[in-house]
Amino acid sequence: MLSLVVLISGGGSNLRALLEASEDAEFPARVVAVGADRDADGFEHAEEFGIPTFSVAMTNFPDREAWGDSILEQVLAWSPDLVVLSGFMKLLPPRVVAALSPNLINTHPAYLPEFPGAHAVRDALAAGATQTGASVIVVDNGVDSGPIISQERIPVLPGDTEERLHERIKPVERRLLIQAILDIANSQIDLKELARS
Ligand code: GAR
Image 1 (cartoon, protein in one colour):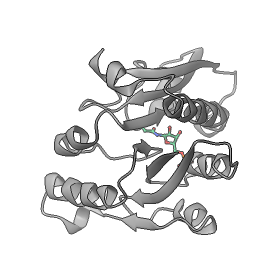
Image 2 (cartoon, protein in one colour; image 1 turned 180 degrees about the horizontal axis):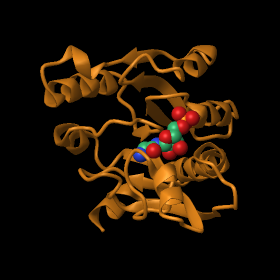
Image 3 (cartoon, protein in one colour; image 1 turned 90 degrees about the horizontal axis):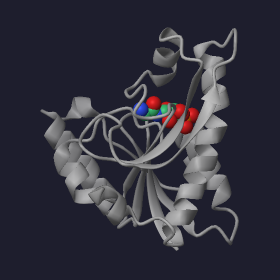
Image 4 (cartoon, rainbow, N blue to C red; image 1 turned 45 degrees about the vertical axis):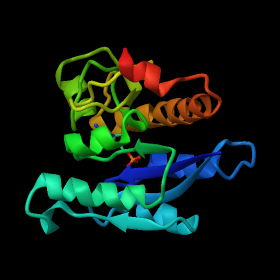
């Protein structure tokens, strides 16, 4: 059974999908804690499922490194097998990535390496893209630049707004994330090998 710590910043709809998936006794992973860089709305999903939460706001620290060290301490207290960034909108400092890598994965609402960064859906629309996508990656020190675990194309439809397109992308992200966790748990995906590639 894989133990997961999930880090979020927002509403946590992908976190919720993971919590629902882990209600199935056959699902080979359990969320042991949910962390955020703020008092995230998504904590309510964790609370509903009885999962402990922790929040580490950057403003309480003199610099990013000290903030990252505090997040790392909180994460490691749960000895997770895997850390999932699911809508966590801050870059983790290199020390944190080094400590958790390669067992640190991220979901992203675009077909990477297209449209990395915090506004992937908006950027795809602004670029006039006719298709975008969803990706699950291993986190490295770049911005959404790590090795790709899985990804899928999603068409941009006429009249799509950022919100509408994002709402169509999220169910695909959830499916990819849950499948990636299954594959990691069943050794179909070797994160160490992927991180070396
Ligand atoms: C998701 O689409 C996730 O991929 C994205 O934020 C959304 C969070 O939604 N993350 C990024 O853009 C990271 N670069 P949620 O809070 O409802 O799960």
